[in-house]
Image (cartoon, rainbow, N blue to C red; front, side):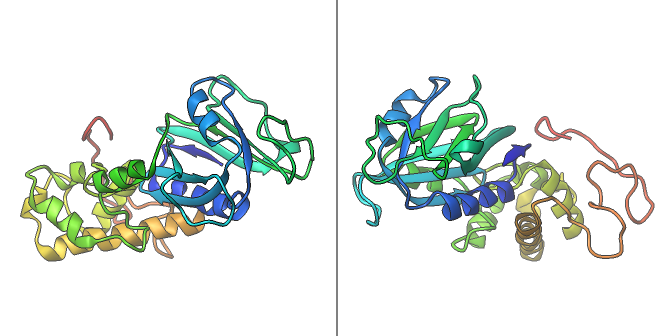
Length: 269
């Protein structure tokens, strides 16, 4: 799956596909570009034990043995796709050729194969990654990133109170806050515009001045629109009968007929 101008729903869709296709399998790991050579060597021959998405970041948990719970010797790989990225999972025979941007290539190892062997069975699963960020560490890497990131509206453990508290502590406009991944994780430029339109909140209204009801409306629409994006695989924010994909983003006119005004906030229109 190729992710352009990635937002949180796309990362959660990749996580779902990886749980379905890669989880529980053992892989030979390579870094064709050489930009993740140490990380690839560290996870090669291990089993993918867990996959998590938090906001715009994807996490793979690699264990030395199959079927075990994530333990102290787990290796966690963190991925941030940036403005665009690709992490395709497919049969080995269908894997595209590596490029200079390919940080990680995974080739399934079947029973009896060693981590230095090149799998040859056409039925084996493979995966290939290009991304802006790809690093690795222990379980503390995942835990520290979860603390640094704000609540993710697509996760079951998302805590609205953390978002509300982040709003109360800043005099920045809510349009800036929604793009700050430490305040709310997974919202990008398109969702920001549509969430605020649906919540009837001006992007430059200071987050600390929002009422509790307004903050809850912003959160509720964040949950709703990101869930729609996850289920549909596309950012369609309008309700039935509008005849368009979005209310305001990239449109000159609103559905009500008024002109849509656009300006830059944090270097994004």
